[in-house]
View (cartoon, each protein chain N blue to C red):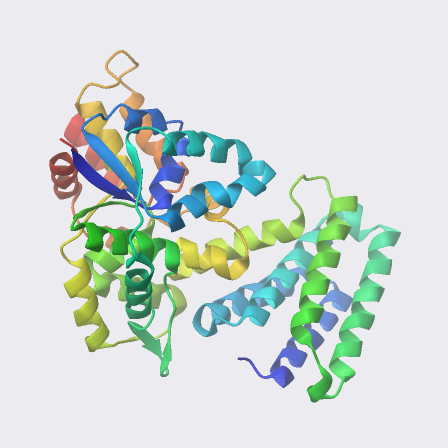
Length: 184
Length: 218
């Protein structure tokens, strides 16, 4: 478990990055958080990573970033994060807050976005594939990010994740010979 | 009849490339799935609009004579045993790294209980866990920048469980069918097209391996 105090620091960083509209730093933070989650298996870190990713994607879209609804959304988000940070440690419920922020982001994107798949689903697939790229199995990556194996796998296929030649632990000749024996 | 235990990753690749029919046509084979795999390719995707149609096709495939759903009173226990071993194999600063979950372990547990040795799996981590733990460690270290420790007791136990297994990927099945003449009435480019389609569907095969296949079978 990651200590609440540390999680509060992440919330403060998110507040600052959103205020500064620093899309690149949000993306970097999202990646660092998911890399840490791969080792700690901490659900809060996963959700923080998904939030950073979704925020960075939303802020990149001109029709969203320039809209009044986005300004309202940002103000509300800031208030929610502030409230949580100011709470005494024994009264905090960051897990619940993070779930609510993810729900809010998904709902916002469903009304404002142009895609059938909302930004949080997208974040789950993107960061799930990152966990797989780090070495976790596809099932473990899907479970941690709350998505499905078919969704992650179809994304992975379009990346260069499998282009690590030293992971070819057998020659094609050997593999094919084994396959023939098994299938004939 | 020969048996091939299936992980969901290969069935997803074959379904994505509309090649499940080819498995159906392999009348000498029985494709065996543990319940966790069914959960991943049918039960869960049935509730996701984007994957619902594929899940229905997959469900139909599971009803074919070539497919057997494997249940066993000790399956869950064996799956947990393999999951626990794999998830305590690597440590970083005394913390275990959880690398696999129930679905992947279920296929390996089924192989053990059925005394079978051939596993159809496209997913990289399970493949390396079976074939070469050192390469898996090297891979994770290269991607995370962490220096991992291998727990020798778990390694020994895992290698005893898994080293007799042979991994077959969807590309091997496709290459075999091509070699057998299953696609002889189609454009000869089908070999290259099929191998690439499976790679794009998520099979852990490198570009270099595809080139090797083309050199070997064309």
